[in-house]
Each structure stands twice: as C-alpha cells, then as structure tokens.
Amino acid sequence: MPSLRIIGGEKGGIIIHAPANLPVRPTTDRAKESLFNILHNHFDLDNIKALDLFSGTGNMAYEFASRGAQQVVSVDINFNCYNFIKQSKIKMGFNNLEVLKADVFKYLQKCEDSFDIIFADAPYDLAKIPEIPYLVLDKNMLNPSGWLIVEHGSELDLSKHPRIKEVRKYGQSTFSIFV
Image (tube, rainbow, N blue to C red; front, side, top):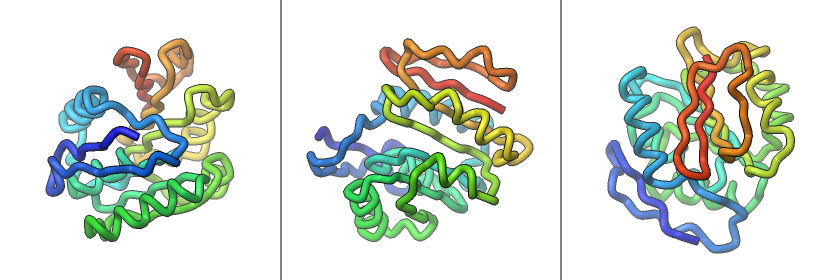
C-alpha cells in the first residue's frame, strides 16, 4: 500500500502509512490537490459539514478534517478500513471526524443529515455507482449550495444526470460534480 499524504490544512504534509490489507485505491495526490483547489474557490472549508462515502483509508476525510471542517463523517463497510480510520483519527487528534462502519447504500437510505460536500469514491467496478446521485439528491442530503462529488473510472459517464454541474478527468479517474 502506498503512503498517503495530507496535502493541506493543519496536518498538511503528514504521511500516513496504511496497512497493505486494506481493499482500497486511494485518490491520487494529483487528483486530490486539483479537487481541493476547486473546492477552495467555492467553499469556506472550515465551516462545512462533509460526508466521505466508501472512505477506504480515510484519505479524503483526513483532508477535510485537516482543513478545519466543522464536521466530517466517514463511512465504510470494511472492518479493517473502519478500524484504521478510527486509529488514525485518534493519532491525529481529529475531534471533528466521526467514523461509521456501515453499508453506504443502507446509510444513505437512513441518513437524516444534510451536508455541504458529499464525496463518494466507490470501487470503480461497483455497478450501483450511477444510483448514488439519485439517492443523495432525491433525499435532499445536500445543503442549498452543496456539492456531491462522485469519483469513478473514466469509462463511466454520469454526465446525463439532470443535476450534473461539471466533470473533471484525471487519468483513469473522473470526478462528476452534482448540485
């Protein structure tokens, strides 16, 4: 497992060594840096509520927490991922990070909360990825000026969704942004 680096905020520059047994494909530093440059132009990141779905190593959750998000919720079904994120949260002192072990689709059906940014990075081969925007947007889980960002393989096209804002491609990865 490659090391992860927190790019910005209070913990910027910290390297996190994730165990090799996690079934993950973390967002690359280049794609993460590009995404946070976009987010900085649209959000005051230290006043947001963020939801990180399919959290994996916690890579994106740490980035939001490091940048001072009011609240960050991390959701992953894998016990090893959940445990790793919980341990990392304690080690880094992220009091603004809540870690949940849950199936993302069941969580989305039951969630009553709303967020400014929802980031979903499902396994690229997951057939249910196109359902995510409908589940989130139909339940009004985004605050009025909020964004849903779905990271997916570049071969998947989500641009026909009626609430797509923009699509950004970074090599094999694509960020589809919904409002």
